[in-house]
Image (cartoon, rainbow, N blue to C red; front, side):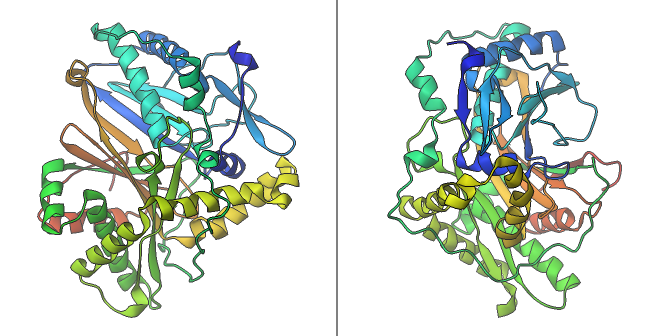
Length: 422
């Protein structure tokens, strides 16, 4: 079957993200690899074409049906671009001939920006890995293992795992109702997305996490909440709960090979109305919340919540242009309106030993959004953790507070930014 005859229904997350896309909420997140030598754009284009042969699911364009968007296969090939503008900014994926992702290069860096309508961090990392592998084969003669991909494997890589593990008999979790704390900051001009990246040694974080008997994710989530509590104490008279949106990769709990979205979000919180919290208290609260929620049974409730909106008769019968109008408001109120900020951990990136000498670092940037003007995403590679804050405002109060608290734990951090001033 030719690529332009293929088509795919969007998964549950993809249907939401395709309807809320705007110049501010682009739904684009970035994955990038910095190499040891300048990128050759001709070879990178050839590498992209080879990667698309391996993952034909990425050889698609977004189309608008009467009720829902969908992906349609295409014989067209996306063209790589030299990076000029701020990251994760507007990509007209609904425009005829465009793709739901793009590949940039700049000096030694290769960047892949993807719309969440298509995939999540795990799916994106698999595609970036294939792209870099093909590029290093062409540029540095890194051996390339030939593999035969069956139609069954390709089908499994495009399955909707939300539907696979949906159980109609399990109740969905209740939504929060209390108003949460929001950072008192203003949006910058359109087209600006400010990135601050902290580089931390993995061993230092592991050692500190071990002292508290928690994972690195729990430690950093606790520091994040502590930072927001400190900011609220200085800027707000009326105390409100601090709620963090933490995406969970469901592949760690349910067997699947899908390249599509397959994550849910848990929301650890601290209610500042109950009084002041020591850091040890925050750690324990977050640890209990993670332990309570990160079980297959509990996570199936979140799958249920993700799927039931799609099954709603009202939404199913609502034409897609109308969905585009109402979805942003619904998402703002029931989604981002329910939490203060977001922190996503994409985990550890490992590459074969023959590729490692040519890759200096791997980074990730969160998708921008109006409801949560500042969010963070972290990823680990080669004994370093790269935690990047994406910010739609000029204010850096959260970034400064977070890294100050990291240093107060005795952990060294190197800070970089795409701004002239921090």
